[in-house]
Every structure is written in C-alpha cells, then in structure tokens.
Image 1 (tube, rainbow, N blue to C red):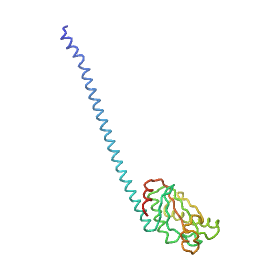
Image 2: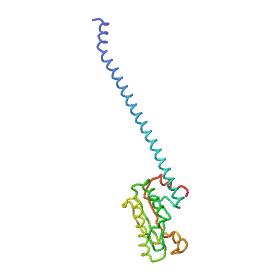
Image 3: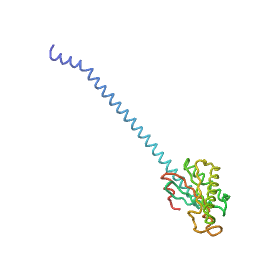
Image 4: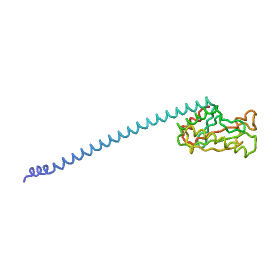
Length: 212
C-alpha cells in the first residue's frame, strides 16, 4: 500500500473520532449556553423579587409612619424607641383612686390595638400601670396593677390575643409630674398607663424617631 493510500485510510479511520469530538464540543457549548440562560433567568427573577420586596417594605414603612403620626397629632401620643422595641406614652389616664377606663380614652385604645395588629402581629405588648403619690406604696402598687389589668382586658376585647399582653403595676414610681396627687395640677398624668411593643424592627425604630 502506497503512502497516499495509507494517509487516506488514516483519514477514514480518524473521521468518526473527529466528528464525535466536534459533536461533543457542540453539546458542551449548548449545555453551557443553556445553563447560562437559566442562571441569567434566575438572577433576573431574584432581582425582580427583591425590587418588589423593597417596594412593599417601603410602602409598609410609609403606612406605619402615617399611622404613628396620626396617633401623635390626634391623641397626643409620644412614641419613642427603647431597648426592647417601641414605647407608646398615650394619654390614657384614670380618675383618682379608680381603675375604670373612661369613655374618652376608648378611641385611643382602639387605635393602638389596630396599629399593633397591623404592624406587630404576634409581638409581646406590655401594659405598664401607674398611680399618683397619694396613698401608701402597697396600695398604689395594687391600684396601678388594676389599671394595667383593665387596659389589658380592653385590648383583648379589641382583638389582641390575651397571651400576647402582659400587665404590670408600678405604683407611684416614674411620676410625670413629681408630687402631683389627687386634684392637683398634673396629677392625672401620673395616673396613667404606658404601652411597650417588643419589636426589634429597624424600620419601626426609624419611624418612631421621627420628629414629634
């Protein structure tokens, strides 16, 4: 067999392998292209979801801001960020030596309950009750506890879960107007309740720190 014939025979033998190699390269190229398309699609979907989530979160923050500002302007609430969440000092006050919730304060409790349900579902809410300095320490502790319990019951009736709410009486500690008791000016501010919503949400904290 001549050299030319041998070369032709080698080409004939090698041809299937060459074709197979080309086909393999084409398959790999198609697979890489397909995987890249899938990755690009997943990235686009993730980016779209993130943008939608950011928009929804921004809308939620703005809605919360509007509701908190409304509580400030309509009811005179003072809302501040504390270590465990948000503190709502609302003018829910009591008559001297009494733990009954007054009709004038029920709209404030209703608004607070709706805000808590909407933005802080499942969060622990602490109701802190206080008394003015008239009377003994133990009596005032018991009176402030009754006030906190009364407000807890009212919030439960407004739809908040009973096991979500804690109530504590602090007697005549943390007076708003030191020394004011009975019918003295400022005494009513000492006979009050304060709400604390335990939430670590940064957006809520930022809203709470807005000018009041």
